[in-house]
Every structure is written in C-alpha cells, then in structure tokens.
Length: 171
Image (cartoon, rainbow, N blue to C red; front, top):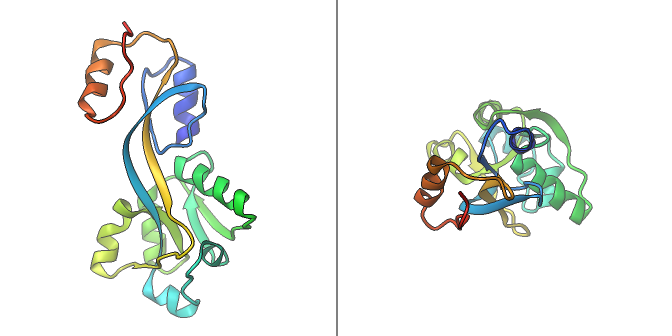
C-alpha cells in the first residue's frame, strides 16, 4: 500500500519504498517497471452483464478493487475523477490475489495489472475486456526521502534495477 510505505519512509522505519506509483511528490523517485491495468471478470459474470468496451462501462459493473491508498487505486481514482466517472465499488481488498479469486468466482469485475491476471486469462478462469477508450498504465517506482543519506545496500539495490534512474552523490 503506497500510503503505508510513505508513512514508514517519513518516520524513518525504512530507507527505500517500492510502490505501484501514485506516491506523493515530496519523495525522490524512479521508475523500475511498467504494467497495464486491464479489465477482467469471469466468463459467467460477463454473460450475466454486458461485456463493457469503455472505462465508464466497466465502472457501471460491481467492481472489486485494491484498497484506498494502493498505487493502482490512486491511479484509478484520479482517472475516474478526471473523466467524471462514478465507479460502482462492491469491495476493496488489500491483496491482488484475493481480488483475483473473488473475480474468478464471479462476484464482480476488476481492473488489475496484466501480469497479476495473465495466468487466469490464459487458463480461461478470467476474460479480458479490452477498453477502447483507456490505456491504464501503472508505473512501479522506488521512492526515497529527499536528501536522506543512503546505505551501501540501498545504493547497490537501486543500481541493480538497471534502467532505473538512481540517486547520485548520496552517502
């Protein structure tokens, strides 16, 4: 949960946070990965409800999303607000895997990272509903308190992320 990671960073409990984007601008950050949030539900669910083709359409269905404060939820709430969409949120869970199980059971639809639902789509337990009006990119970021010294282990870890921008000249 992005909000919890931010709190732990501010309070000094951790030196580095890895989040699904959506972190406050007060933190130094770098992107280390990207994924796309995709709309999915069980085949039986989409047979009961018309399969949506737009973001507003998926939001008319009972949705099971990540909890408030999660990076993907922050991204979705920002987009819903920008587009004037009122989502029909049935439940909010702390675990993406729990959401997948609920949705596989036909209890609602969701918007989750493609990598999280890929196996369920491949096996036929979930059906992907491509949205023609939305590409929902989720950025995976590292975040740090600006100006706080970094340990050698944290510097090495950040350098190991490869293409990520890493803080320079921090001892």
